[in-house]
Image (cartoon, each protein chain N blue to C red):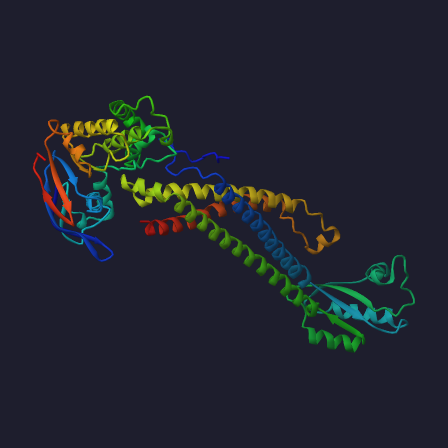
Length: 225
Length: 296
């Protein structure tokens, strides 16, 4: 699913991720932890193709981004669902339109996906807010809409960057349950977080592994913390 | 005030948010450019028509000016007409009547003035055939038969006039091109401002898999439509302004007329908005693609 072999990356000539090597199996559930500034977001950006490694070999869903042209990279990116801490919904279109956006961009027709999107909205519990604009809904509702958008395109891999960072603990737990549920449906989930409480709360619910980033180095933990 | 979104796709709302007053500014600027384009094009067309009229009308005419003692005038006039009638390149000649002479001198002598007794020259209007006569040969024959007769093919004042109208025409077309380039620059800036103002939207749709071409189409289609709409409004106002210009009266007979006529008006009303739309489309496309390459 994801394979990093001696991958390095940095900014402005300074290396921030050094010799990362890890394999993430299909259908697995991983937490990416580490202190602020450790490079969790940078690593996620590499996984959703916003950054290319300086060196080493990176494989995502069986493809090497470094070898792909723009069209191939876009096709791969559409198979990756991304959930951001700050939601990143388009404020001028409704919740349902935000959720359906990846399908529109993929060129699918409204009639073909209307039922799927409605089902997804019910699953995230936003059927009563589907026509509201993002500024009119709560942070938790925004994050649930973002999760629905991340999976609407039948994505295989879900990358979440501090998905509970902007919501209250109760809503955080609900969002985590949604991500666990997606993992049970066979999706590979990688969550970047510095919230150890969040990681502990998954105990007994999912077989999660942790990847710890510290000073640009990656260490792997087991399913237990 | 929100701009009605004429480009709302069938499968959902536009990915680019409506921009309110900046959209109206783009339309207003395109309208101003459309208005100026109509005026410049009309001026160019009018100057071209004037040059063509003067060229074709005056090129086929010449004048014989006969200065002689009044007692000899009729006799010499007959001789001069006889020479003209046997000269190749001259189709016809006609001696201007006393009334026509009086009409020509009216601006200087006033109305109802008589030219009888005045040492005024006799004028003979000549219609030329083909490229006209061999002037040196004709003048030599006139000097012999009707001394004091001077052949004038108007070239002395026709050429500068013709050159001036052609220069005017060139300036009008140059102004038209400058208006188009300015419209292009304005649309380009509007496109870049629009893109910069929506950098976060661009970033989000890129992250969910939109190609730059998809994003560019969303911006460019909207900007081109604004260019077209503004151009149409400007062209309509410009055409109405031209139609409202008072008639040039008798000067119109000389080819002086700024009104483009029915067909010309329709052509301007169609061409200017389409032209503005095409300029908007091309410049916005280039500007947006270029800006997208530089957006992180």
